[in-house]
Amino acid sequence: MSTYIVNDNGINRNMTADEAAAYELATAQLLEEIAKTEAAKQASSAARVSALAKLKALGLTDDEIKALVG
Image (cartoon, rainbow, N blue to C red; front, top):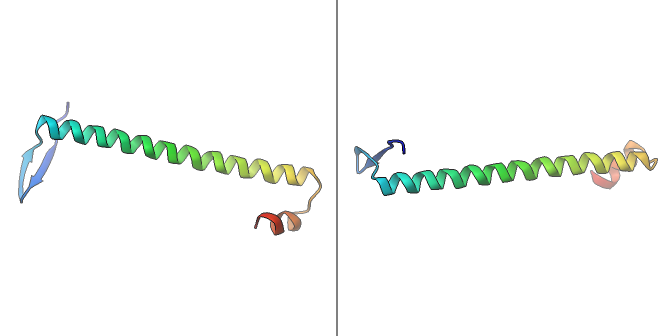
């Protein structure tokens, strides 16, 4: 476990073991949530690119596709 510093009413002190464990858990949860969000964004982007390619393959023009999806 690393040593973390916390400012407690204007005084810097080392975190207690419980505070450090809670901090590390919260940090790990936040990083996991960030990774999930990024994966969802990438999946959405890939789905959009795939959908646009399929519309193009069906013979729609760029203007028609733009009218459908913006």
